[in-house]
Structure formats: C-alpha cells, structure tokens
Image (cartoon, rainbow, N blue to C red):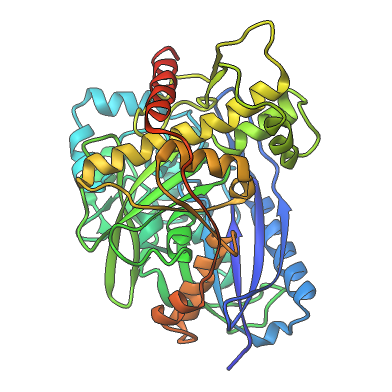
Length: 491
C-alpha cells in the first residue's frame, strides 16, 4: 500500500499542504500565503489563480520536505474556506471573476431584499442557514448581475460554479470532475438539508441557473483522479472533501453526537455534532451538514464568529503592536488583567448568535492608564467571550450543557487564550497534539475513502496535548460575561 496521504488545506489567508503517514502522523507541511484583495470597504476577494498556484507550490514543498515519492501518494484530501465563491469557464477552466470571499459583505442589500420579500423562513427551514452575505448563493447572483456576459454564458451551460473545493477538484482532475461534497454544498443557501440535493425553488429565488451547479457527493470515497497537475502523477485518487470547519470536527474525532470543537483561525468556528438528525436552532446558530461517510450523514450546529486570529493580525498590521502574531501572548501576560478594557471583535460585523452585519468593532473602558498590554489582553479575551456566547447558544438549542471543548487552529497555541477560554466557559478545554486538525480531517476522510484505515483506527491514533481546566470562580465569570454582553449592545 502506498505510503502517505496528501492533505490540501486551502484557507482564507494561505494554502497549506500536509503529508500524513499511514500512522496518522504529520511527516511534513508547507504553506504559502494568498493575497487579500479589498476593492471597497467590506468587500473581500481572492484570485482563483493565486489559490491554485499556492496549492501547487505548497504540495511540492511539503512532499519535498517529507522526502516522499509523489508516486507513493495513496490519496488526496481537500479542505477549504467554505462559502468563498468561484465561477469559471467550463471549456478553458479560466475564472471569470475573482473569488468572492466568505467575509465579503457586498450582497447585504440583496439579502435585505430577500428578507423583505418574506423568503427568510423558507431559506431557514430548508437550508438551516440565515439570509446573510456570508453564504455562496447571493455571491453567485452578484457575479451574474455584474460581470459582463456571465449570465448569458451561465444560462447557456458554459459556466461552472464551485466553492473552493470544487475549483481545486476541477484543476486536480484536469477539468473532468465537477463535484462538491455535502458539507460545502450545505453552505450555499441552495441545498435542502434533508434531501441533500439542490433545491429548484431556492435556486429560482436567488436567480442561479441549475446548469452551473456541481454534483453533490459524499465527503469520503474516490471522487476523481489526478490528471496533469504537475506535482502528482496521473491517476491518484481524490478521495476526501470537507469544508474547513467540518474537516476540523472530523479531525478532532468528534464522531459522536454531543462532541464539539472550536477552530481558532481567521475567525472562530464552533461546531457541535448532533448526530443523524438536523437540529433547528432557536438561538441564532446554523444547522449544517457535518459529513457523509460510509453512507451515513451527520449534522452539526455551528456558531461562526467572523473575527478571531484576524483581530491579532489587526493589532500587528494595522496598529503595529508587535512584529509577529505570536508575540501577543507575552505582551498580554505582562499585565494581570485587561485593566477594565473590553474588546468586541466586530471588525467584519457580528456573526452568530447576533447576525448583525452592520456592527463594528469596539474598545471600551479605556483610561489614561491603558497600555498596549491591556489592549492586547482585551483582544484575546474578546475572542474567548464570543466563543462563550456560541457555547451558551448551543446549550439552549440542545437542552444539554457542553461538557468539554476541543480546540485547534493557530491561535489555540496561545496558552493564555486557552486558559481564559476554559475560565470563561467553566469547562475543560482540550488541545490535541497536532493542532492542524483541519488538514488532518481531510487526510482522514481521504484515507477512509481508499481503505487505509477505519474510524476506529482514527480514534485510537489521535492524541491530545494538554487540558486547560477552569480556575475562575462562578461569580466572577458571570460578572465578566455580563460586562462583555453590555459592550456588545453598544456596537
């Protein structure tokens, strides 16, 4: 049996390739940043060609670091920024416009029109989502309305739509395979959660021609084979796909209902496995497909906070607080507390459970004695507070308290943030040995898809690094949460 799985983790700011051995250990990884494009305030785009270029480069570099022969690749797994939208020419494979990124708010007026037309409940009931610019469907409509000639070409069947997974599979297979998995499809506003297929009435409401849509497939299994990539031989199975947050849930082996994880990346994304039945949220959360594996579909409740690591980047790049993001921990730890400063991380609006796209970030409680260290600590605490809001909403929706939180993503390496997270939640926070669980989930799904291992093997092979346990008393916890929620009301 060939010796490794290649996981491609295409994120918002970079593409990372990870070489994973059959013992589930990371042999090597490599990442390359992708440029962020901001045409107008609140608008965010990527170049699809830059995404593909970073993917190719990262894959080559990771395999070279690992010292593996590309011909020994057993399978390729893909995980991706989910709602980011690409439209490309079926004949040439060339993108017809920049990718519109999940963070982009340009379709807010169209979302308001749909709400005014009384369509919000229909979308909510069928897709588990809210009418928000976050999701792919309104982004497709914007491109069709604003890119010259695109609508006519789409109606003529010459255009393909995909979230980033679809675009990568198309390129990996030499244009032979146009698919998306159920987890990514569930983020478009176009998929019926129960039939797991595109909904004609939703497509009509958004003005999206069915001819542009990919085939919806399971998250694990051979979906296509490589052709003409330049970094892998032809014929390697592409055998796993999941949106980044679902992939992290899988990578954390949260296979049972009631298990949850939070990924601290550009944003903070909390998912709770709810088993084989979708749970409708009454608390501003999303109902989404977690994955479809071995014929069984698992669902999840999701809470999305748009800004997490991006707030640290803002302190670094926008305000010049430090040269490297990793320096925030020492700076924040140089003071015993935030000195009364409270940060609301609404730099791109507020996601769940508030869904207020007009909200903006705020620092309150500033005094003459406030220092950079107090602000840095308040920013980290703001990330912890928004995650606590999501956990609280999930407990209300399920009627069950969350017993522990598994964490991953770059910012979970910050011990100060993880301890505060445990303190403000009042439950253990468990960090895995390998925090690249988004890529690991893609590797696991791909390995499952070609029979490298079973789900039981994955649970056995996964290992934790550290558990953070709450040290804050209940009265102080309640006071701090009340203080934060008061600040939210003012933004």
